[in-house]
Length: 382
Picture 1 (cartoon, helix red, strand yellow):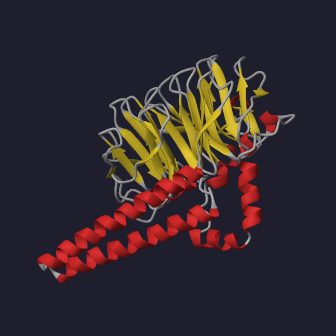
Picture 2 (tube, rainbow, N blue to C red; picture 1 turned 180 degrees about the vertical axis):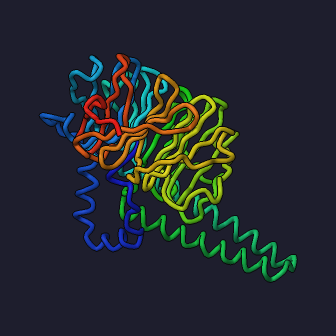
């Protein structure tokens, strides 16, 4: 999982609104985004952002709507038809036949044949409309609460807090209205399904959507999480204990014990972005900016930093069959957890930024990133 093209915080919404002075180019860009992906001669050499397994098949996604598959453990690849041309950032197959991919412009794609074909389930137009409706409802709720508080004669400090909250909610309505005028712009950055029906898609500006019917309906799900500044969410993971984990910008880190109904925030861990999170058995790892890696053995309640002299940012990773977690990042850096919470590493000679990895059914490890597909076997141990 991971998205190198969307790791840096994008320009603010105000800057996007200024672009509305040129509506024709914007509309043309939106129309292009929802045209089928072009067929490329060497898609495995293009920028790829995520790779995973659908049974024994390998599936990878990347720029310009590219999705490629391999049925021989990565020896050969072919591009499959995709109905959009936006950059695709992440994918997940909870079952070999059922998969979802997400990307820019609020795109959510679905496959029911192991990644051979894809259909569009959701896009940023739907997301913008849902966020506007949520923001408008929030304003009405706060207006009612403030009126009741004033009638009851509550303390001035409490009234001021409600007034500030109402002001923020009103700004959110303006922001949502502007987003509809601009069109779908914000990317989803990760997708996670717990089974064939229940899934989540998360991304820029605090986007958090969920489905309980295999994606036939996607619904905004931000009411149970504290993210007032709408920082980006980068990654989700599910633990063996049933808990869900979510990491993001500005040190955001949460866990949920009720399948995403509510989220507990882990405070004061790290101020930098946490681009990835992985769970295996009783261990959790989260990692991100400047090579910071943190480990938890109590379900994400408490964390300790893992020593890492390599200060290259880590963008994505995978769980290995042996129980360890593999992390990849800039400068061709690859790290793997060891027994006892240590790290061992490699550096790929390309020094290319890496965004994800997968262990094939044959036991090899493939890396993806700015230079496309790369085998870990080419990397040098640190």
